[in-house]
Length: 422
Image 1 (cartoon, rainbow, N blue to C red):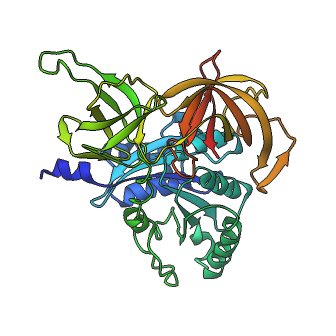
Image 2: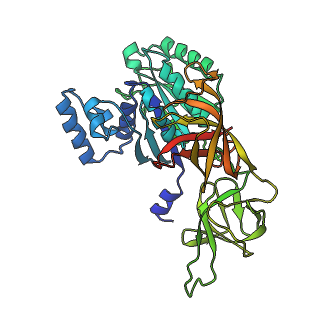
Image 3: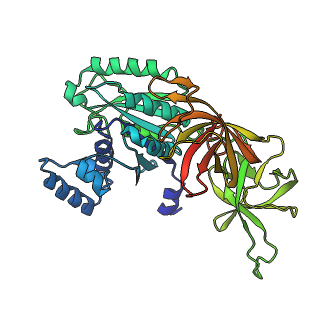
């Protein structure tokens, strides 16, 4: 096996960083990349020049993450910035999300596909409104692993008591949320303590460094390998001499494992058939599983098109036109009760009507404000939708892909909300 094959076969961990403004998210990402030796010379030269212009006196590693010029000028993050790197153990995609309240929607975007969320807490300031907001959103989005990084420990003299008290407070708050796995790491992103290398300043901390956690945390069981779901994105008909009769269905496995010879059911038609072949890239395979992209052919000629779904015959998703959804509103124009929107679910497009706004969530207290129908940008609320056609779905807690929707303003084609089916 070539080294390239080994790289392609490596685990991929998607993680998001969140926290209040100036908690050190960008500095942490810069430190991770720098200490893991993931920085090119020209990048370092650009950061050195930018650091000199700002007169900071030392290398500002946060500039490695703040790629947008407006961010560099203000020293803040204002959009989701994606970074890619790899170590010998694992590949990583980082979504660096903003800390401001008005960018809650950006955090939802960045965190929607994450396996893990790093939430930074300033050791001096403790738990802030944004800490609660970001933890709640991470829980709502079904992120399986949350790592609280207690940052700036160097500014509290690496005091164990500060860390222990913050850990207790965060455990108390998190106990009201549905999170499978929570970890705590005391760090100094600026000095590099417990980020990649173990800190000599905190001998009382016996847990892993942040990089060790990222490289070793178990993510294989995060995906749903029980419920077989394959939304069809495209029907492939080459019509060439070599592939004259080929009719394959391309898509991304949203759940479960599909094998040659397996019986499958096509939704919404209900017709059944057997898998004839599975193609991944240019090779034929015996099986495909989430989250692989594949092309599946069937033994029978069944009319299948984009938006249909192949599922296991003995394990069907729910099918309904009335959906209970937790919506995060993205648009400057507020949600219109009774309004009509386009809705996209997996590869299926439809239209929907907002039947009822059940309540709005106060993200800071987790209280439900019932009777408050005024859902504006960055608000999160529970809404009942009525779709023009039945959708085949699972609850978001069971499958993040088949349990999510987006709403689209049909006049402007803007994505106005992301929704998690309850």
